[in-house]
Length: 459
Ligand SMILES: [Fe+2]
Ligand SMILES: [Fe+2]
Image (cartoon, rainbow, N blue to C red; front, top):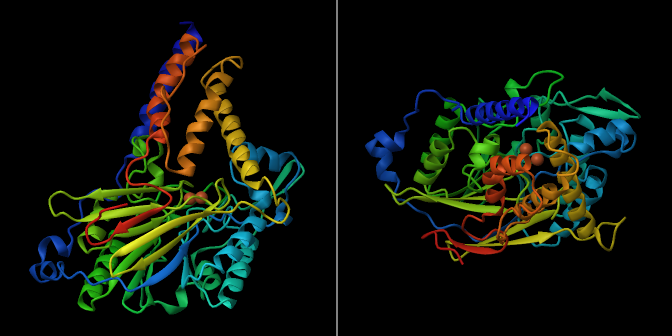
């Protein structure tokens, strides 16, 4: 090993260790105690399991809406795209196409678990509001919560040639005003410490819209924090609403931006900021009160995972919906019937006005090529030669794309090391848990499934 490689080896180990510990720092240092754990009266309410009323709704996530007037050409925009994989230049068209399709799905309401905009720009929020208003004209209610990109985002910019210029962005107060008619004007209760709320979209069904974002900690002119957390006060508010729901015999569903559990092995280790801090506490709290389904976004993948708490027998599903602005450009339709059956199907946008044919292939190639570009940049930092890079970047992009689409079928071997030199072999070994994780489809199925909300059985 040469001197520079020895140095890079230790740098790499240090970076991996540093990012590992950073990702796993819990938000609350002392464990919070909940009433369901200590209060006999509350514990007596827990066995109450009301039937879910019949309903049908759509879930669409991570629109990352981008108004093209902010610039879609020039070197500054290209530089941004080199570190991104979203179809920003087409997001207006994709969003419009999706909403048009959703308006024909005979759903009662639509939920959007955050990342409505590219980076919280006011003009992009206004574009989203315009699109959502159209849905409401077709008598569809729409409910939103913020994603990490939507509030106090210092990266709200426009692109002109080789320059980026800051543009007007929104804070939490603006968000609530902008989305007044998309949740905030019909709440039964509003959390004082976040943009979380509860409402009743269907008689007998409460919907918890949870704001899991750290917008209070975002810094001016800086990228927003990717991670998510609930304060102790928000968790106490969530529990108070769950207790009330029991007393009033309401079934409860929830939606939020961040995941409440891992979506693949090593998810926490490599991308811990995509799972809400202290996720075990959050998922256990919701499960204890019989919340069976939580709809999430953020990682841009079509992925459903489940967790069972052996001590109580409680269970909960995290139903992550991929980004509308990233292949396979999905949305979900959920139908609840017979009091306890949730039938989930996935629909993919396969045509937009400017690309009637081959949009699916274009979107798939876009994310593949974007991942290759990002992997090349990472391998440059790890001193992997340009000649060696193509031997692995395609494999990385394929694994990532498979995870985004869901229902992954793991290849054997997961990484084909043909032609790898000793250094690339080492780098591949360092990343093997991530690539293996992307290919590992934790149960249950991801795209089309039926969940028995009474027993947790899936088919
Ligand atoms: Fe996103
Ligand atoms: Fe996000």
